[in-house]
Image (cartoon, rainbow, N blue to C red; front, side):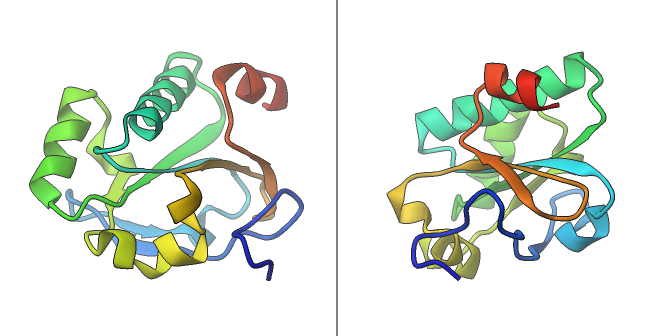
Length: 139
């Protein structure tokens, strides 16, 4: 493992969380599908905007890519309200209420900034910090 998170060409570690709608996130269950994984927080405007843009692009273009989102907001109500305001389906949204104390937050080195990842069918990271244009070119 590198000392600064995960990079293209590396296998993404598994993430397991529960969602507001009673759904369960186990990233390993998405093997065989391309996945956009967005790591964000409501208090970080740039990561929130990126989360919304990626979600909307994939939804509008009916891309054959699964969208999964993990928020690091410590207040579940703030997370839920934000997701509803942003009109994002809660079934693809998960919240790690331990925030900056989260093992995921630490393992992905998010203190250096929130990120999103494009992951291939085998769990290998194809790209990090995707814009809509970069996503269009990669899928």
